[in-house]
Length: 430
Ligand SMILES: Cc1cc2nc3c(=O)[nH]c(=O)nc-3n(C[C@H](O)[C@H](O)[C@H](O)COP(=O)(O)OP(=O)(O)OC[C@H]3O[C@@H](n4cnc5c(N)ncnc54)[C@H](O)[C@@H]3O)c2cc1C
Image (tube, rainbow, N blue to C red):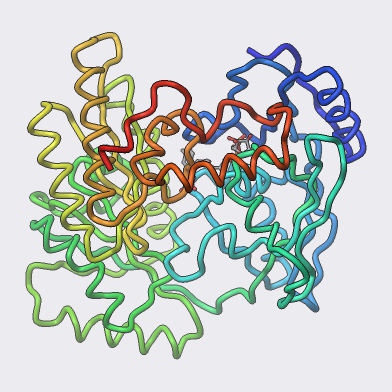
């Protein structure tokens, strides 16, 4: 629990709070909607939580330059809706988009299904206004497409999980809204056939705007959302979307059909109506909450691997599931190798909890051994900090800590996040 929660309206108020925090040396934790998956907004060292929900204004939509200037508390889906009204498009689309904030997205560098074609939050943030722990207000980046005036501080702040400063304003890059979209469901009774198909699609010069994957358990937990669920015996599916002009979509469709024509192990179905598309996305976005129908708790990870190695990762999760007698689901953003691994358990059973923790450590070790990363989009927070040395060598962690100390010499800005404390996993296991 924090000692206090404040709801500022302006950058100047936040600056005043940070000056007090520096003077009295109390921790400050920025909070968007609190949907982060790694505990980033939890005030583990107490102090003051700065809730940014009142700073939720879209300050400007500049259609001529395809830019939006927003405050951090704007809900992601709200920005998307508003820019769509003027024919523009803000691509980052985490499954939580109806309730998470742009500030939180920048804090974690959130991604979503559209990242396979368009990229993640860092690719759409051109500049920031930030209040530093000292209370000073800085601006980073530009309103121009190009800009190399000094270091790229924008990229440093995006994904810094609120540990360097509080983002109070964001300049977001927008795109023209694609003319059209088509949605396909590709199913197979072979898990390895589906996971292997991901890299083949992308290497065939077919860039879908989404390429999402679900294994059989993920399908089962959300099949109630679909009026026409995949056939019995389906081991895995891909949800694939093509966007662009009608002509571009036609070309991509032809390539896809040509590629899959001689492969009877795949059943390909095009969504017939906008209702069906809505249902499929409702199903996809509901996987995470629906998993709690299986068990009351879970360890939820978002490792990422080079896309050609997805089959190895998914097969390894199946192996872990058998070895530890735990239900483990895999689903997520297959197009960019970012697979969500949910280890389901009941925490009141100490044996299950211990098995889950062991399975998680083995998952991380395996991911790193196949050139992957601990987190594709959820960040490190508190849940993964002790595993940081599995991926980063001591010198790299030292440089990151020095950067943190430069911005935050008193360690008052969201302390206890990202960096391992005493119980870290030995780097010898790297
Ligand atoms: C059902 C569900 C589905 C999800 N799906 C996805 C997904 O598809 N992709 C994905 O990437 N994530 C996903 N998430 C995780 C989460 O929604 C994202 O990480 C999101 O970006 C967090 O936004 P928030 O506003 O809730 O931030 P919070 O959880 O409040 O904060 C996240 C971090 O950012 C920091 N922060 C918040 N605001 C600021 C600020 N103004 N300045 C500096 N630091 C700040 C916080 O201190 C914290 O460290 C999902 C979560 C849920 C519950």
